[in-house]
Length: 159
Image (tube, rainbow, N blue to C red; front, side):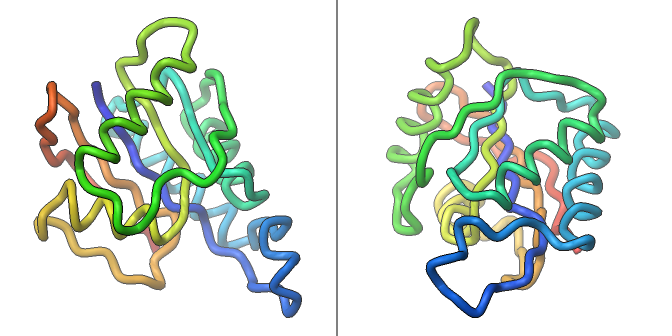
């Protein structure tokens, strides 16, 4: 199975921390999401299922990616994703649990999340092969999960 991690597009941080989950994308963030989708389209990577955290910015990023791809597929809110310190095995377990949410076994599962999940993917799955700067939004990381082994695929560092 191919696992695509997409970090949400740019958003302006609200002054009130309690409003963060409701914060939507900025104009740049919407462009970021479309760029992430264009990156996937150019490589023929089209998700069969999109999972995302419960925030507005991940919802809007998922919608922008699917718009750029010109496809629709099931989109599921899966809560918080996985923790920054998650092991490769924990990430694989979470990805498999998300795959079970699809009507049929997905060949490509995309997850739209946040910087902590991005960091876990970079550390545990990419093993230093990919560098993404913290300020980059809507980065795309592509991995293949074969049994318990992860292989690194193409990536887009975002803007």
